[in-house]
Length: 303
Image 1 (tube, rainbow, N blue to C red):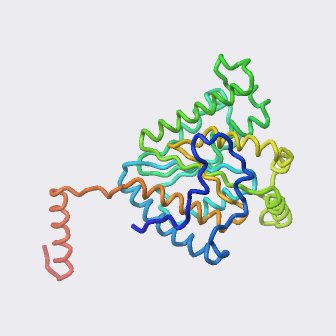
Image 2: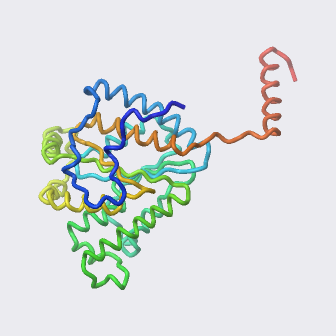
Image 3: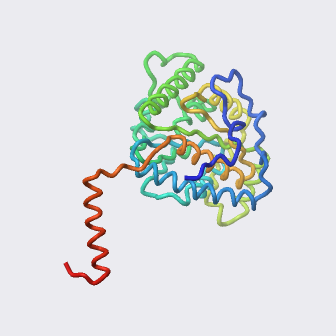
């Protein structure tokens, strides 16, 4: 199988235990050595082909599985990235889950109860379009949501900082357990600039075929842009670990975003060092008997 790594992925990884993460250090418009949409499209097509082969091996081997998390502000391109990057894979081996407002049942459990239900079985890919990380992002910007959620008794009257530290610790432990059980966790933050978000919102509002994507709530959250930058920085710093690092992907150019994401996913599957199931000698003998009969049938030999 061809090796990916068409990009130097190092600049996109948030180093584990980094003391301070600043999103200003990550350029949303970065395109590296890619010279425009044409070259990026060619690169994406190559990676889609390699990803299809990698996913077939993952599906056939039934040795490990993959959890892909997408987090971003509105209009960063999560849906489009998922659609384009995974266009070539076998749909039987992939499930996509979108994390909306928690249901009443979900609110009455620990915040990690919901994603636990969607952990991918061996051989499969699960994609979280938004995720359990909303509980340390949206809920931090709007802490009044905590009044309607289940919290451990020890945290009922605790300062907010203690609640976020608790959740960061819970997330890291949960993802470490996933890794220990053969589930590779890939986490993408699609890093969109405020100006590009403004342009995309206007495009949606001005295009009849895109207006269905618009929600007044999306625009209301834009008012909290600065707060979201802070909570994203702290989330990246606290939860980018060796077993589950974050990738900060430039999102101002969709064609570049998709090519890099495809490259990361393909590379991480290839690093699993998977192999197709071995065929036993007994099974091989049976297959050769079938082959012999099929060959004889083609030559007009009756059995």
